[in-house]
Image (tube, rainbow, N blue to C red; front, side, top):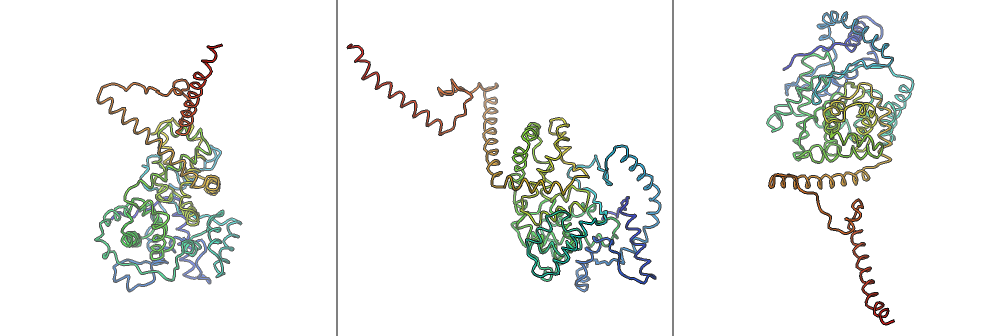
Length: 494
């Protein structure tokens, strides 16, 4: 098992202060309430793991409380203190860079050497609520107290600006969005009961590679327990639905729900998503997924034909967007805040909204795209790396607008046309290769046998137009024959 990596940065300092405040409040303060800014992700991890301690011990799964996190944090305080000096100097340099560039720079700097298939390192940085967020949080809390609140109201909260605000509210609202009752959930089996599944080894490999998606600084024992829970969560779904096939990236979706709603509720949420939103991704082949990704180009073409032509000429394809669609951007974004905001939106929307968000992102980055060389390597490298400062609230509104203007049934027709044209081109290329193989030279250009085609080579001819022109030609010929047979002899007599 890999060792725990201590991540540098502002997150650790905030955790350090939170732990100090927590210890001071427990030692002698009059108020023993936990501060509101306490790490909600850590609370979520514990929330789903404290239901049945006896069963947990029987399954051999380690369950930890917040006090274990404090104890482990104390052991790392000395190391954090030695890192603070270098961190302060690095922050000063970053501040100077911001002032020099005249624009805001994300706290988490992009890693230009990261592969597109390598998971990014999540930043769990917390931000104070602004006035609008506070008002919306109060509305959501009031709606939770009202048993008459409808599903449409929850969807509106999730899709509108700022989403569901924080993980405490998401823990309660996410199950409602997919129709899961948190009070009626099935207990999780032990890992030993599932390790005979054919996908077990692949799932474990992917889970072990997902260390960067866990909150930083958690104790080793709790991280191992979470990895076991994630493995059990995934295997439970694919065992219950054997026709669904596990794909790499599925664990990125599962881990987000595990962190927010806990192990047992997360299973029921993933069960519903796997049979609805993600069902095309879990087929025997990737063909249904590839077909969905083809929606990107018609959407871009209808909004910006020049941009679509530029992308098509580069032959960049849609591979850059594959991890976005498969993981709901959970694999490619560095900010946990952005990930859960997108999940708010996707849970309350049509299953194709990730495609529309992808198209909105590409259109938004058109200036960057036009500045790159028009070749596959350059544009794939650019598009596969998502910027840190994407304005997701604006992009979600753009995606919603695209969905209203160009609904899936309209784009489906464009995709069918694209597939037909690609098939014709593929057949022509195969015929040309066969001719070259047989005769060792390029085939001659096709000869147009149609009279209309000879005189009007650029006129597009459909089957209907061919029938019409043929009938018209026959009619003209019949009239000429009739005229010659009846009127020409009379002219000769005169």
